[in-house]
Image 1 (cartoon, rainbow, N blue to C red):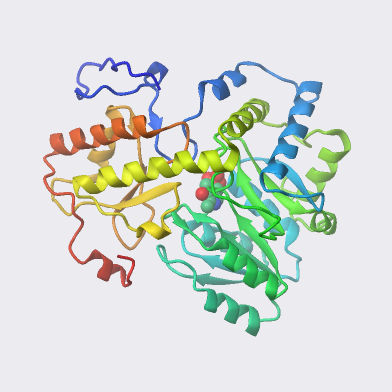
Image 2: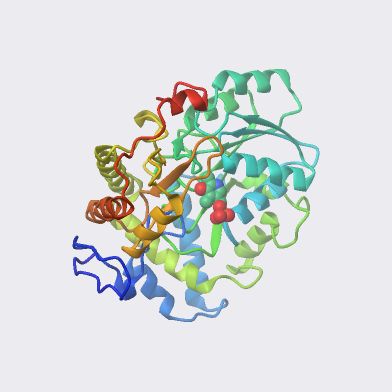
Length: 405
Ligand SMILES: *Cc1c(COP(=O)(O)O)cnc(C)c1O
């Protein structure tokens, strides 16, 4: 994050701010994965490793051990790595752990909860979708009611931080409820693991899925599942898919330390470097602290310009923040994105159906210096676009039909 001034190409917008630029004019990614990784993590990908190489096998083993330790998992749990994006591991976990005659209660308040329900439909597994919209926390009474009235439910699927809005869901309350009703808990901790506190010692989950390229700041290529060993054993022969069979992958990894099929070797080696840096930053607490500073700095700077956040402060995880698009007719989202991108930063489109929004991530190798540079780029972009007022339409909260503001 050095502070040299970028050399702008002809025709590109000029900036007066001193922007911290990455080598090669690479943009800073304010996106929830892929995200900006450290030079050290990137450098680890300069070497090629064979999948049977001792170094690579040791790296795989070390990653599994470190991931279990991050969630305080004792030897009742094990960790399975799986090629592909996060969704591949969600699908693998649902197919491997939900009994064919089981039924999943999917607690959803965004796209990722709903995607799990869609996967279950593909898999032909019974499920009930409790959909709380896009920006409200799940209602615990509704969950409890479903568990009480439907004895067929065997598993509950919950998203820790719903990246659609950035809402921080009350996972420990839900876990307590699920345990009290003696069901299994599956957690999509994709965008939270490594930054939001989560301990198997106090939050007894059965299955948890997360990915290399979110808060642990690796590059895309694989994801991982932490699961009870008893469930991994029971999963034998259950998956519809050979490549996504977590039991089979687990058996192979334990037998010879290898991945069954071609592993993303560069991503795996880089991830180990990312985990070492995570530890050096102070583990989960250290990363949480930096991301929370990023979020607070970002939100304060955007509010100072007149932008409003979708969520009230107490629901906003330090992962990604959703802002309402201004009503000002000079504001055109695609132009806004392009102007910011020209200045070296990539933001993220909104994913809400109810209101026009955009999102800015707080995660990855960024700190408040980079946030300041982004805020300067946003101010310049608004100025060249002629946007005078960043306020969303009056009464948008009422339009969404709730009391989120
Ligand atoms: C990123 C993410 C996923 C998985 O997305 P992929 O694009 O498949 O990596 C799942 N759930 C949540 C909450 C996420 O943030």
